[in-house]
Image 1 (cartoon, rainbow, N blue to C red):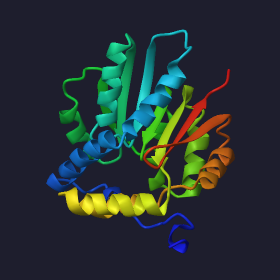
Image 2 (image 1 turned 90 degrees about the horizontal axis):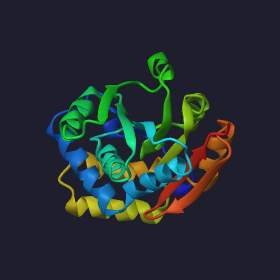
Image 3 (image 1 turned 120 degrees about the vertical axis):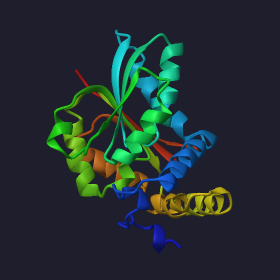
Length: 237
């Protein structure tokens, strides 16, 4: 058991195929929204955003959500922004155009949310700038060297900071999500990708090494329920 979780898996998830589309994707996105709300995962990202905004001398923020999926995190953030009297310009980014189309429909009631189909490694994305960039269950899709390369550039694209919310690779997290999705999921993609995402995820030391090598400093790293790492990086003056 120990050897299986000793290092990050390089196996590709079904969701990583940018051509995947149709009802299986839609069902997957609906289930992921439910799982993240039920297990409290989205709250980890929102808490990080609140921490970065606290103490800022402005009320307007441009925030990007990388790997936005169906836009559920953006909807939660939009609702929080309205209650907090903040002017939020929210942009969901995903490389899969089929996912973006679903997200647009899913978030049509929120005028402050827009979406872009973008490859985060493209020159087009590098030209973008935001106050805050967040990613929920996004970064584990990439191997360490790609993450270091990307984060090194991303820290120069933000004015306030970054929030990372990703998975702690742990045997209990793996077996728990495998059983949960086996009995309750209607999506074949979720049944495969959910436990695989745990195997592709991070131990604390791995995440710390990636952040240090990308010059993301200073950062705050905390473990959150359920088996999540929360990273908050506040950019200095």
